[in-house]
Image 1 (cartoon, rainbow, N blue to C red):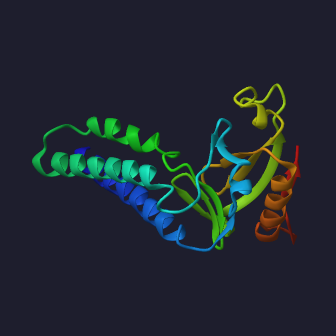
Image 2 (image 1 turned 90 degrees about the vertical axis):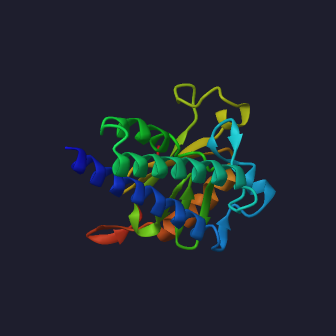
Length: 198
């Protein structure tokens, strides 16, 4: 059982390390959106916090914290695997920091190859559909900020876990719809954009 957990956790750490390195590499690509302060002011990962520009200098704190957390988990895993300092059940505790770190990078950006969202890069081919949900009184984010209450939540369904962001202006909603419609194609008989307006 311990060997199985060692292998499983090694794969798990390798996957998250790979995804983090992939995000860092993709941050060097040309950013399509947001590129101005006006655009950054109307996109949020959470309604009460504006996203930061997708640059190393603006994401420095998140990069340092996420790197430190990954390094800590790797060191603890290696100590546990080679010196057998603890049982396999402690791996579940090591899993918790990584599982709850998806938004350490305050990031949502459109780059040439896809989307950057938190600590994830989603290539265009892995996006299945997208839709905007108005932020009405029944929405889970309603009431967090005045600007967000009049906006929309963009929900993007991927082949893995879905992602979302909050958009607080009609102009940004139109820009994102245009960009996503151009890149996100779903094969259902003929190619068509799977975009739903709720």
